[in-house]
Length: 200
Image 1 (cartoon, rainbow, N blue to C red):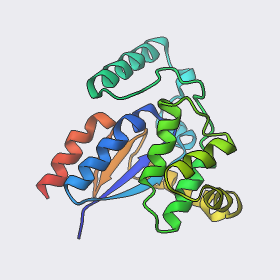
Image 2 (tube, rainbow, N blue to C red):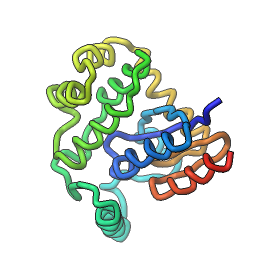
Image 3 (cartoon, one colour):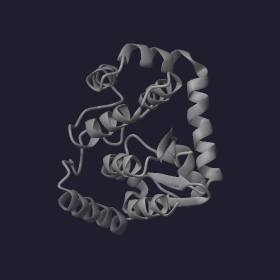
Image 4 (cartoon, helix red, strand yellow):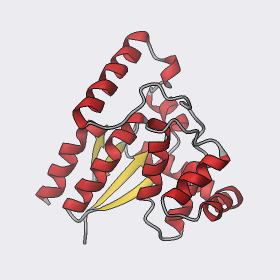
């Protein structure tokens, strides 16, 4: 059986954006399956000692900006350091991702589309027209996914369940990658994700 990576993600996290395409590449290299799990950091942070950006100490904010610049330059990745629509409410965009999963679709391009919209294109993924446009641009039926996210209460339940599972796995931030019993937090741990997959 292929190895599975439980990918706990937040659609407005810059670190999720920075690591997303590289995770896809690593999984493909090792024939691993990515199990996409959008989660609500608004639930995870309070239970694990985390703080939203606006409430962090100035030193932490300053270091975060240094790291964003370092990784942008290191990876030559387009990124807007202070995007116009951050933070943004990621629901129901996260629900559209879950709806795509429910339909048996590869939601990877949709996840990357929303992340890119926030961090490279300065688009508001809390805006209905933007959500639809991003989904359509990435080859999905945007109206169908949005309708499902808004009308099917079990979609929101899955978002909550993903958050519960994240907490149970020891996740405290995004992105987080879980392989078996091993937790890797942050896109800067992707090398270790690749090593574990290679050693199996």
